[in-house]
Length: 114
Image (cartoon, rainbow, N blue to C red; front, side, top):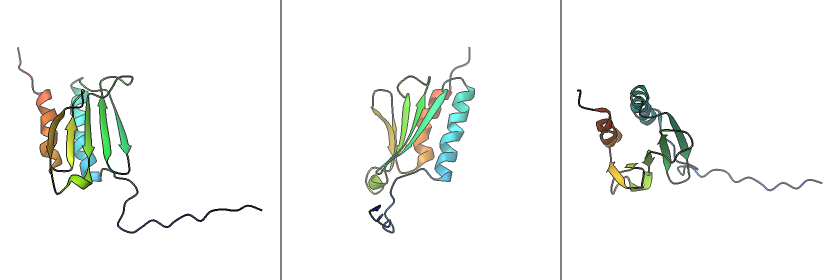
């Protein structure tokens, strides 16, 4: 005889994991495409966890991420739910608006012409 434990129903209004929505991914992948075309970035990884979502950018697959773009919905009312972390874990930019936060990475694309 097989005994199965009942699976609990998901609670309404409480997400099981945090994810980037379509507009957020569009903004992030637009920047990613420009940086790949410039030869700066080559790989990425996405993690959807219980309390935050992470988009990690790599120069090479086997390395640590160059940048991490994170979404923390619990910080929406305080510091802003979007954060960009650098290689060493330092906070490069934090805010409420994703395109504004991503501008810190777009500055890396602008270079002087010789």
